[in-house]
Image 1: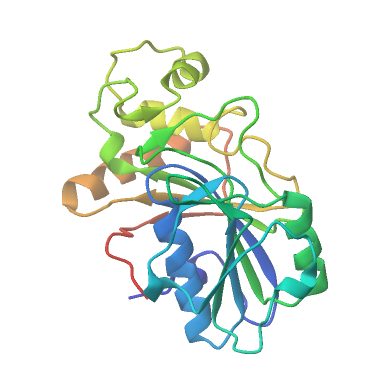
Image 2 (image 1 turned 135 degrees about the vertical axis):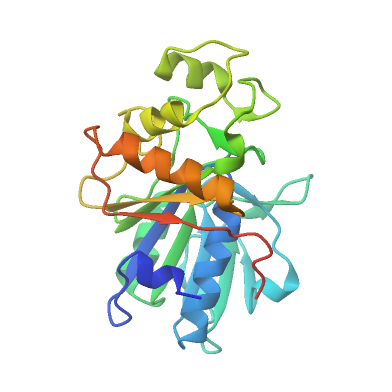
Length: 247
């Protein structure tokens, strides 16, 4: 299988900070990238500016939970994948880190790759960001906007869409409407949509996740066709399935 990092034009000699936004597979994408980089002998930091579920033991080599903003909290002699959060919530989630501190870690160069989950979605396959989202470190070099193809055909409601009221506001649709490929293309293209507040210097990649069968791949192709007529010009589009990604 072709590596994900090669599809986002990663050159293994160059340090990068990659931020994931959207919904429908951000955490799985983060750990797939982390494992690919680790298998190439690179030092990887996986973290969040929001919150993620505490990772499985086979997804990391070491974990650091600290609210200190001292670079001395990291022991990278063992290399591999380091997961970092400032604390653990009562629900067992790893809570987010100040984006300015993530920038400082990147500038120090102690990790080859930093992968940041910059957006929450409560497990839904698609979302529209609120005014204060996403939280993207300013030195991010690549942003991966993730959308779950299983959102297509679903009703616009809280059960299937995170922040459905923002989704409707952005796209001019209504609660109870059915998500289609046109809505997804317009969400990607809209300035307040998938790539809201992305640093101008960062490359943008669309990840259409959960392409588990021919039907989903055809729907993804429809989205690409609609995007071709819009202003959005991403640096790459990946149609994939991140399910069952383990270290």
